[in-house]
Structures are given as C-alpha cells and as structure tokens.
Length: 203
Image 1 (tube, rainbow, N blue to C red):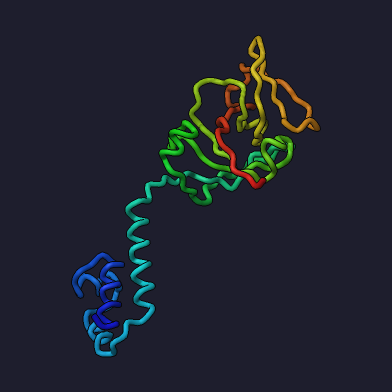
Image 2 (image 1 turned 90 degrees about the vertical axis):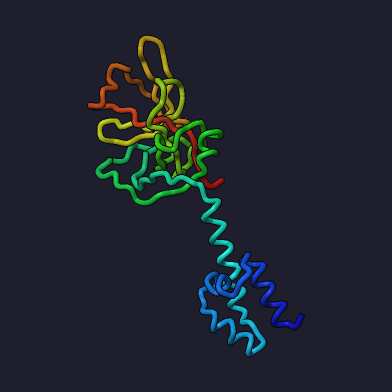
C-alpha cells in the first residue's frame, strides 16, 4: 500500500466511512476533489482536521443530553438588598439531568440560576457565587432561601422557631438577624422565591 492509499485508509477509519461518496460528504468536499488528491499523491492536512472534527461533532450530538437551566442576571443580595426592577433571562446554562436528579434531587423544570451579591452569607456563599434555586419546595424548613422583602431580593438562612416565627440569619456575623412571621408570607411584603439547593463559586 503506497502512502496515498494508507492516508486514504486512515481517513476512512477516522470518519467511519467506506466509500468515496461517504467520505466526501463527511469532509464537505466533492468526490472530484478526492480524486485530485490521488493525482497529486497527497492528502492535505486540513482533510484530517475536518475528519477529526466531523467525528467530534457527531459524538457531541449523540451524547449531549444536557438540559439548559434559566440564568438570570439580576442578583440576590447577600448584603443590604438589591432593588429588583427587571428579571430578564440573560442566557442558558446546561446541566446533566441525571446529575440534577440524583445529586441535587431536583427537577430541571423547577430550578433556575442567579448570582449572589454581597458578603452577608460569607463564607458559605461568596460575593458573585452562582446559586441554583428550587422554586417548588415542600414546606419551609431550616435552610438557605431566596426571598423578596419590600422590593429587595435577598438570600438568607431561615430558621424555623415556635409560634410561626422565622429567624432571618446571615452566615456573616457582622450582620444582625431579624424575625418575620409565617403569616406575613403572603407575597405582598414578603415572598419566598425558592430554596437554594446548590452553589458554584471560586475557592
């Protein structure tokens, strides 16, 4: 087998094709071009790059089962509170649905992503940390939540106390805790947006 035939055989193997017509389609060239290569007894390096790229793209299409989650550019303040004016979806970020279900225990349709603004939840959540918020949670229990309070969007740790009292706490001891009553969670002045179930941040 001469050099050209060997190179051609390599292309067939890389692209998983067996005929010139199939190879030309995989490489995005005409059969005439491939015959021209034979006349020159040389296959250009660009053909091999195209072959590798075509297999990579084909693999991505077959194996990519990720689900895109909504990501909002507005920030949930972990400081004094950021005024919420517009909640416009900026882009989408993808996650593996199996990972969401098994590791986080949520349905992709029930969660969204946003950023933390401020240091009141430090060191648990740093300024700029991305958080995943579950909109559909079964009842309030101790944990970290995104809440709307007097037009401020906050991320805080909630602690359930007797008689329907909820202590709103910051993990940063520089911030004082305060209390609300469950009866006030009617969406008028105070609304629980969702529970924080995951965070991604720089160490």
